[in-house]
Length: 87
Image 1: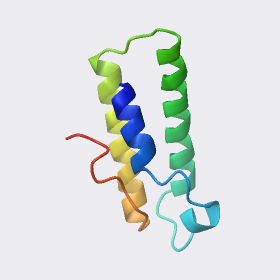
Image 2: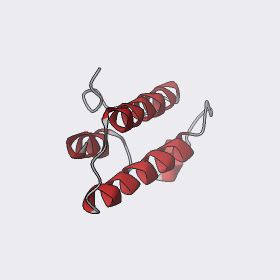
Image 3: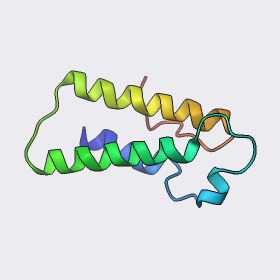
Image 4: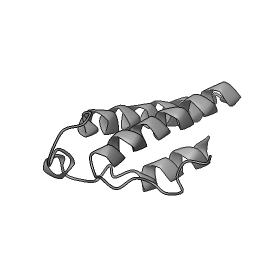
């Protein structure tokens, strides 16, 4: 899980300024889905630090969320992670 979190943090454009994320036609709120994903990753970081060990269902759910966020970003013309999400 920690490896997936690290790959997602490095692959998604969390550092882009809001003006660049919200540039052009809106096809799903890229800024909100990025904020949601960042929140999910922060939550899992805290849970892992507290000693919780995720199961396959939790790992799968996080990957599925990442794929959905990537699709929204792709539709908006933003960079998407090419290798952050295993298939």
